[in-house]
Image 1 (spheres, rainbow, N blue to C red):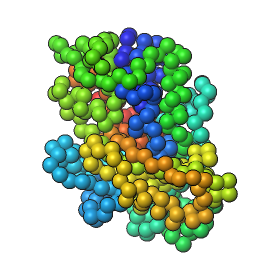
Image 2: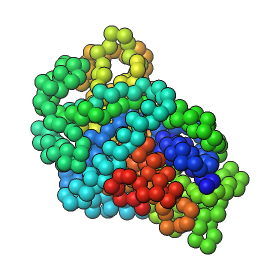
Image 3: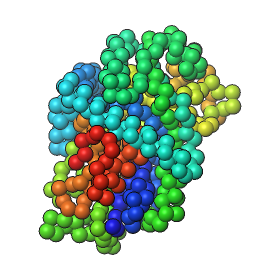
Image 4: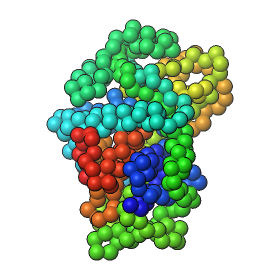
Length: 411
């Protein structure tokens, strides 16, 4: 079939790759000048099955209330009259029950494990260099109550197949010696040896190159304006004043997918969660982490990308605002200095923010839409890089009429 993929982020490009490999003729449209230039550009860099516990869990409502007055809060809702945010927030609260949290973890782990295997197989199939490291991910805790809750969460993750094991402070320091100066702050950790890290932007650009070599056509600088429908099916896409037609259409526009589909009567429970990052060039004598880390209490991750350190995290619900907030940017560097006082930068930090497409459950939306010929691949939240290959492979199976492998709630 002729398939039109809307969006050239990591999810759109992986969708294009697996669709092309399945034998389809694929064209990708994106408003940017190249692949991976929005949400995939400077994220946390983690392939983190161990992050499968959703934001919506029994502890979340009280934490969110406690953080409301903090401009640098890890999770910040900027409440105002926004019908989409209100609807999303109510759905979020419903997902905070223990039963729903457990079922959402099951789904997220199933897709994330499948995706990690697909990524590993892809590296064996084609040449990709994106500063990837296979040293696992270490979660560290500085609050005993948070650590106790994490021990329980890790047990649930292990039950569903993610080998996230609880470790002592001494074990944390052995896994990542750069934490030794901050040992007095730590109360324990979790370590997932099979998790990975790498530069999502570099990966996306390189995979787009391999897609093009397979015959995928990329049309950059083309903004998608409207989906045209008739008789209950998509008949074409208007983009930059031009009509594009295909046999199937994949909406992979991240946080902008709901805006495109709303005129068709489809209201996706996806809202933009603004995340921040700082990328630091490292001096040769810098004592910086080499294992990818998650500071769970501050919702900040650290990933070594060659001679750079990516510091990323937090979630701000503020509509489609993409302005950098100096307070939130500063919080990333302040926490970095607390954990790694011997870190020496070789230059100034490069700050960035992006809109992560979040569902209330953190379970992405993948599969057939109620409108014929239209497929959806969005809603991955903070796990877009983690789930990209698995989401693309599963979506290609669905478009091709096959049953996807993972035990997941597909549309």
